[in-house]
Image: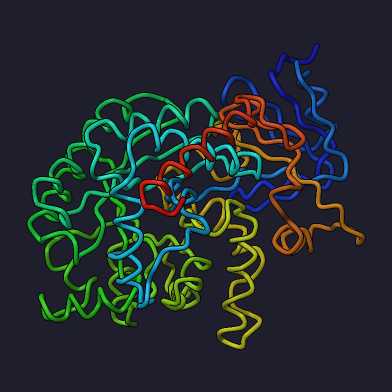
Length: 449
C-alpha cells in the first residue's frame, strides 16, 4: 500500500535546482506536512505515495518557488504618483519624494493594507519567499507586527526587516534597531513562516557607531543584516568626502562585513570593492529594473559571478511583482550592456531567482530547491509554448517564456496558496479594495487627490 502524502504533484517536467541540477521529464514530488518527502520519476513516486490531493502537471514545469531577496512591499502605494520634482537625480528622488510622500506617511494600517496586496500578487505569480525591507519611521514600534499579519494571512514565507536610519534623528535610529530586535526575539526561534533580520539604510544615513552596534547585535542574535549600498554615486561621493574611502571599504574597516550581510543594489561598486565582497563572503541582491528606471546604472553582476559571489534577485517593490520578469530582464540586460551573449547563462539566471536567492537570505538549507527534507515551497508553471521541451532547453524556456500569470499552483510550506491564479487564503477582492483605499488615503495626505 502506498504511503499517505498530503499533496502529490505528478507527470510534470521536474526542475529540481538541487546540487546535481537534476531534471525529470516525467517527474513527481510528494509533500507530507510542510516538507518535501520524495522527488523523482512519476512511476516511482506514485508507487510509494498516494496524495490526499493530487495535481496532474502533465506538460507543465514543476519547480522551486521563486524568491525575492529585496522588496519594499509598501512601494506599490505610490505607483504612478505625480510627484512634483524638478531634479531627477537619485538623492532628490529619495529626499523630495520617497521619504516625505511615502515613508513618512506610513502608519500600521497602511503597511498592513498595501503590503498584503503586494504579497498576495507575488504569491499568485509564484513567489514563495520575500525579504521585505519596511520603511515607516514615523509609526514605531509595531510596524513589523502589522506586516507579519499580512504575510501570515496570505501564507507567504517572509524575512521581515525594518530599515533603521538616523536621517530623522539618532533616537529614531535606535527605535528602528529595537523594532528589528523585538521582532527577531518574537519569531526567529520558531519554525514559522516569518522571521526577522536586522536592517540599516545606508552609510550616508547611518553613523559608524550605529553600524557597529547593528553588527554586534547581528552577531548576538545570529539574524543577518541587509542594507542598501552604492545604489547611486551620491553615496560613493558622500563616503569619500566623510570617510576618505568608498562605502565597502568603510564598511570593511569598521568591522561590519561578513557572510551574513546582504547588500542590495550595489550598482556603483569598484573592482577593488568586488574583491572585498569576495573576501568577506558578502551576498548581493540585484534589482535591475528599478536600477534602470531610476537611472543609477547597472550592477556589474557578471564580474561578481566570475568571483564566485552569491547574487540573488529583487524587485525593489516598485516596477513589477512578477519575479519571472525580473529574472528575464537580468538574463537579457547584461548581454546587451556588455555586448556579450555568454554572460549570465539561462541556468544561472534561474539559480539567481531560486537557490542563489535562498543563499542570499540565509535559508539555503530550507528553500530554493526541490529536495527531500526541504520546505514544500513549490510552483507549477504552464509555459504553453509551441516547441518541444527537453532537458537541454528547459532552463531557457523558463527564463524566456515564464510569466507570473502562467503559474497554475503556488504551494508554500506544504499549503496551496494559489491555484489557477486564484488565491485560496484571502479574499482577493477585499485585498485589492483595501489597498486602493490605503493608497488613496496616502495620496490625499500629499494633496494629490
